[in-house]
Length: 205
View 1 (cartoon, one colour):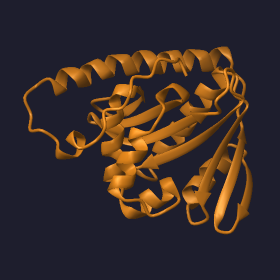
View 2 (spheres, rainbow, N blue to C red; view 1 turned 60 degrees about the horizontal axis):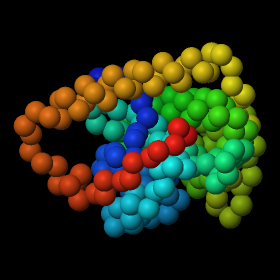
View 3 (cartoon, rainbow, N blue to C red; view 1 turned 60 degrees about the vertical axis):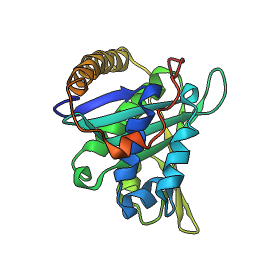
C-alpha cells in the first residue's frame, strides 16, 4: 500500500494531492467524473471549495502517487442517512480492480456510520460506473443521457469495523512512509505547487 500500491484515506491537508490527481485525468476521465468537460481552472476551484468536514476521500496510491479516488459527500445532518459518491481513476489504472476496491471501502465507511443510502450520478456513456453500481445492487434510472444510481448500503458488522480499522492503521503507516520519502530532496512539482492545499478536516467522517 502507499509506496507500493494500495488504499488509504486522504486528509484535508492533502488537497494539493487530490488536485494533482484530478488534473492528470484525461478528457474522457474528467467527463466521467464531473459529467461535463472540465477545465484545469474548474478543477482547482472545485478542490479549493471542498468542505472536508462533510466528506471523506479514499485514495488509491501507486508508488506514492494518488491514482484513484472515491469521494464520499455526506448530507449535512448530524447523523446523515444519505451520501453521494463520486469516483475518479486515471486511465492507466482503469479496468484493473481499483474501482471495485474504492467502492467496497466507501460502502464500508458508510455502513459503519449508519448511512443507509448512497447515490451515484454518471453519464449514460460511463458503462464502467454503471456496472460497478449494479454489482452492488443499485437501483438505476436513466434520463436525458444521465444515469442516477441508488445503492442500499450494507449495515455495519464486526467484520466491517475491523476492516476499516485495519485500513486506517495501514494507511497511517504508509502516510508516514510517504512523508519520509517526500522529505528527501527532489524537484518541485509544478502541478502540486499550483493547487490549493485544502483545509484540515476535524471530523471523524
